[in-house]
Image (tube, rainbow, N blue to C red; front, side, top):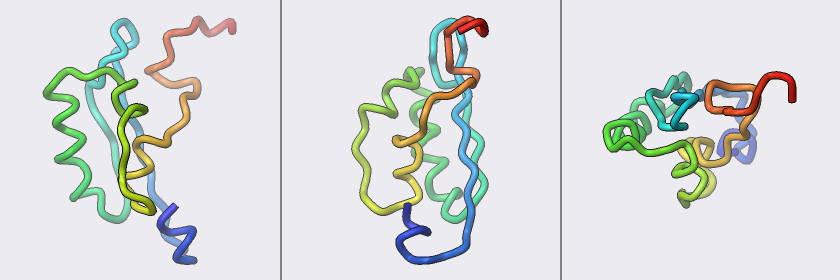
Amino acid sequence: MKNVLACRNERALYEIVCDPASNRVVGLHMIGPESGEIIPAAAVAVKAGLAEDAFDQTITLHPTMAEELVLMRKGRAVCDPRPKSE
């Protein structure tokens, strides 16, 4: 969102890695601007054993790169506990 509003052509890639059985966050992958400033905060969630839903319930500043962590859509990812037939 930050880059779109500022008309920048920068890209970022964020991925939340979860344990499919418990939906707990076990890691994050981040590439892009300000990743080095966001990762330590996200590491708190990993160390605390929080579930991926905790990110959905978090409010962040707008527009920021950190905002993307709480706006991520669930897709066919590791966090998705649904069977692949759905």
